[in-house]
Amino acid sequence: MIKDLTKEEILEIYNTPLLELITKAAEVHQKFHKTGEVQVSSLLSIKTGGCPEDCSYCPQAARYHTEVKVHKLMSVEEVSVCADNAKNGGASRMCLGAAWREVRDNKDFDKVLDMVKTINSKGLEVCATLGMVTEDQAKRLAEAGLYAYNHNIDTSEENYNNIISTRTFDDRLTTIKNVRKAGLTVCSGGIIGMGESAADRIGMLYTLSLLRPQPESVPINALVAVEGTPLEEQPPVPIWDMVRMIATARIVLPKTSVRLSAGRLSMSMEGQALCFLAGANSIFAGDKLLTTPNPKYNEDMEMFKILGLTPKKAFADKPVEVITD
Image (cartoon, rainbow, N blue to C red; front, top):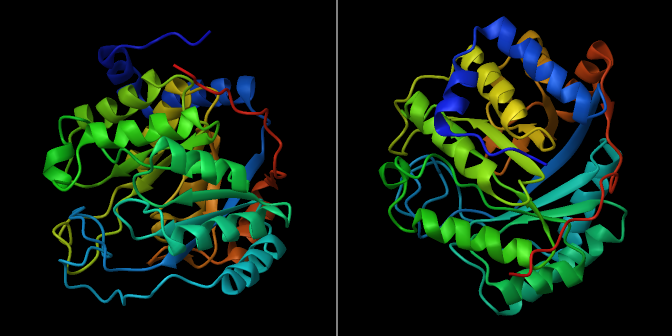
């Protein structure tokens, strides 16, 4: 049984001297996970730009003047080809991202359901991040074969309104509850480097730690500051902050896959190696994460070879626990 930690206890973990923190996190990782095994996902933007929300970090918001070009929803055939390429590149999960505020019951959603069925038939886990969903919509996605739903909480509840005003923190949690009730696995994390305090980073992990079950996947993203967004002037996240955050997440969320996500392109192989040592056991591979650059598949596979890492097979985990209350 997982013990609830207080914010003070999580802060104490976060402030542990770095090498000691990495060692402790590695011990937790070895207890709950197969050492050297890393889950590889591919992330595809199936509908790009034109989003009505005002997330300060996002170049896809219609109100910001960025270089992101608006593209309508891809066809099922186009997505099928991308899924084949992802599988051939070593991915076991395909993640579909659409720049929507929420899912609407229309032909576009029907097309997404067909995408899920098509990718699932190829033996890949399918994840989607489509904005807010109702319980019924989540159930339809599950029936189509969706394995996971991503809905990040982004930051602490206290800092949330400084980053986003077009939907509330509770809206985020409601979507996560709807996803869980549908029997889907939950992928939910956040971003560091947005000007938040250490207390905000701890607050984000605290909220995630109280979810029951805890999320099966928690992405830790380093902000990629994009010109034209309100956060364009934010300095790059130091690698030591990323390692510290990964290690703390591993200890606080012992059974969760901690995903080393956005920002990897600016990290050295040595920096990423420390993140894997500290408990990261999931990455996005491929040259783009929605609209931001990412290391290429062959570069990642070369890194895996050097570090002795093995891609995790699809559907290797136990079925998700369904929440009914």
